[in-house]
Length: 418
Image (cartoon, rainbow, N blue to C red; front, side, top):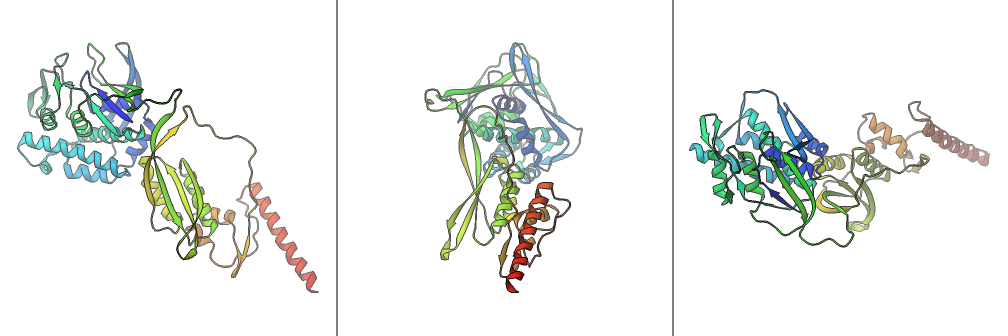
């Protein structure tokens, strides 16, 4: 997918993020990705608004008053502390490095010596991380941008009045050889955060694309025209006739297991599904030395790939997880769950060299009660199960059936031995 940012009224971080949300990026998934950062004292709001007769989305970052400062190293450590994908982390770090280099050049300092005011740093972190994650949610791999109107006049800075565009914004444009154009009014239209995002992620050319989505992201200031960034999203090639498929990107996680019993693999699959994986499935493979094995595959959102990888490693005996980013085509509309009578299997028991082995229905509740991994619950001989009162009625009935069958077989063997 290609995203083209039409910045007819300049750009800021919240305007770019609002345009991507308006084009279809989920605000809830953005909040979930931002929540993985060791950052607090803010709230992200996305609201539908109408300005000058044009409807769009306005993103607002509400920040609690604070007075600390962060340097570039502090911001990078904060970003690395979140559960972002490698590509997302690299993009976010590149944006902040470019911003710090421009600020350092203006102030005659080194990039590591540049201090971001706490309020501005929180705002910039949310805007930059949110925009990068939103691009991934939309499946965008290529970004382009129009010429940037800079506005005019004066702006109040930390050191007094400064001309528009601000020195840091102008330095960002110079380093990227970005095309500019006069703004429609005397106001600051292009902020340093917006300029850092666009000059880092975009090329400055209008691509040929077949449009699929358009989003408007409005700024906080009311002007005589729609103060918004407009994003065009589409494909470089024409879709087939009647093609109304939605496109995005997801992560595919795979782990190969050849030294765990089926109960462990089955419970790991249930844990992944309960944690919110898009889909989980397994298939059999032949491992080295002719050992049979199982590949556990989980489909998850990009920003949650690390969390699910840790869960997969914790619930299986695998020493590693393969992670791949893939494009996905899907039918439009909401996903609905299947309805119908539930079907539950009887708790199965197997006889091994050390006695009876507990089935999955016995191991799972033990793991859920915090008694360690499910593979630990299987160790050692286990007596014929009784019915725990905490189990649902249908599970208790199934266990009673299994117990009665086991007792019946034991009586039959005793009678035959007489």
